[in-house]
Length: 314
Image (cartoon, rainbow, N blue to C red; front, side, top):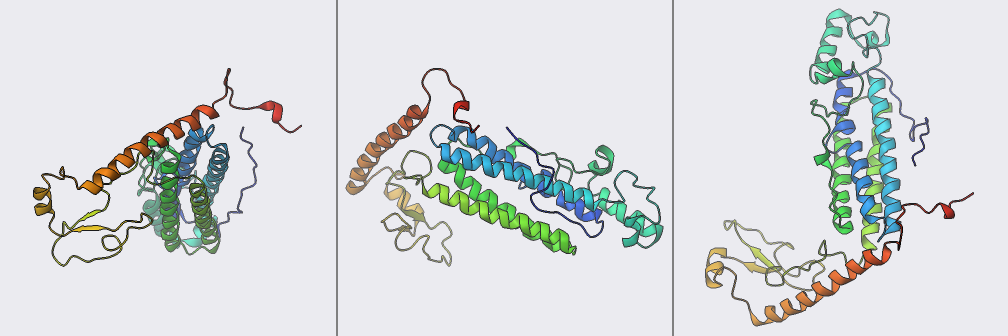
């Protein structure tokens, strides 16, 4: 059950109209890395977490709801940036606020043209209001959502989503001089950082959580780094020394072509790798059963119901 408060989470303000930036800001309204995409991603991920991880369900729903509130902040900011342009695009009176940032009729025509022809959907379909399209007029698409049904994978997707959204806000701040708008963007950017740390902390509570999913990595092919760019190849912690958190060393394959031929297409396996493979297969069976039992045991017996109203506070 959602409850809408008409007060924004953050007091969004705009000092003067800026229709060009309003168009750019659509990226965070209906764009791939925008607030609606984040809200729907966490909202859909939450369903699969409800039974086995009720605490993570609560977190995902809370953050999804906050993202909806951020969508409202972005939409409100876009609308305020269009003050004096929205609705009466060509008939704004000379004394209107939009004219205070322009210099005569020619400048007025230029700014309206620059702002609105960049995204024809703006004046044609919505009359100048925010719409679920990005800054180029491309409609929002459900393919933006990453919800894979495995919580460790979903949480890692969320870390990437929050990182991209933060970066978009950083870039947006370069295109406005309005101190109030920058303040709003800074708030939204900072909440991306807060959500990142929430997801990071939640991932750490699921053990084991690496590799993502259930099945372990095949030990025959985990450690190899294939030097497929042989000229002036740099070495670093991604191909030299110990693998991060694995207790194994990287195997640097300096000549991948010769190595593949010598091992008959990587099918000839060293004896120590054969024993590791047997252990891995046993661990796969054990972990698969544990994860399956985790879900089965969390499912209610008898009639299924999502909410337990008997536990609701009176």
